[in-house]
Image (cartoon, rainbow, N blue to C red; front, side, top):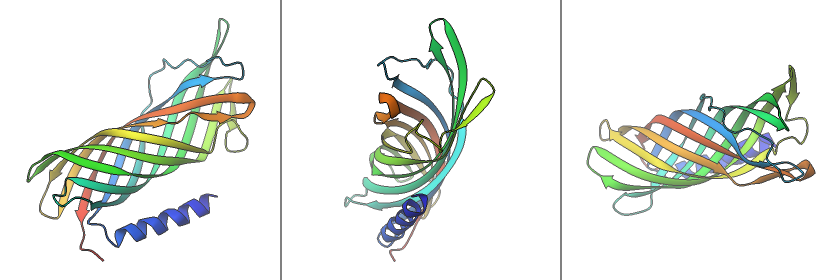
Length: 215
């Protein structure tokens, strides 16, 4: 499964590069948390008040213009992210701390619109859709570590929608630096025994964009 996703992703990325104007490389700091978890009795037994742990990720992709004034752009990207989620299971008056360590490979597709478009400074709103594939996952509580990729405790594939803002600063005519805020929200995912959950992620990304000649 991972091999097929990687193959198709690389194929799409190479295909897009044949008519893209820009490639980018980025790193990120991301904090994730579970939202709207319900067990098989329809109750939320997770404490979601814990602070988010920030983890490093990285990615890259291609961008091309879809409007004559270059304000509207289309983006295809590949990312790798690690998330550490601290929470606890609540049963009556008993709370059991637990930690999830998750690693995802993702592919995203979406657009940017520059509502401030100066010669050296651009402020862009962005929205994307993406899917994440779980390549590693573990859950630790009561000094026991459970492998989440060897069972059905979490869905291996989740779908998401993103929105946020990007500030792009042109270094020269060919290259630019950007910093971006992104809010990623998964659609509700169901697992065994009628349990369901969502994962929300807040990220700050920084990277460089490089203009290309069309291939």
